[in-house]
Picture 1 (cartoon, rainbow, N blue to C red):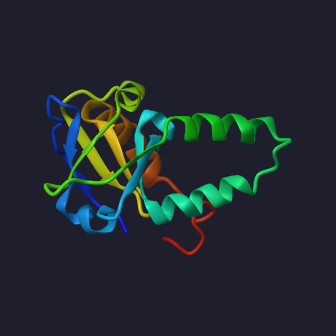
Picture 2: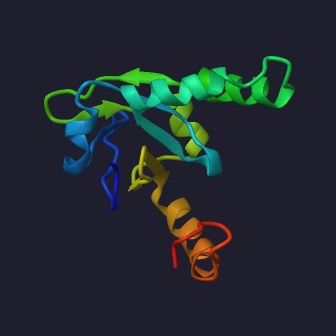
Length: 143
């Protein structure tokens, strides 16, 4: 499970050193792809296969499902971390997420997310009020 917030920097070659806490789960390979809210999703290979199976279950007759699949999968890149735990973020994903040098890598349960640090700060500031006001209807049993 991916948890926490980490603030690594991208090097001049577009490489990111994965947070130490994430390396074991991602050591066998991972998939980077476009995430919602203009971040980059990071899935372990196993988790990506589960997500892909769920996507395949959507009817091909659904235009929204076809559109989502195209955007999600066309930006996907499979990577294997090097011995230092580094991965390269492809230019198309860096541009999509507005990622430059300063990053926020957050744990989101079944995936990690890579954000431009300023975009993450803005998003978090906007969402913290809504978070504190979330009621039980959204997450039954969580108080």
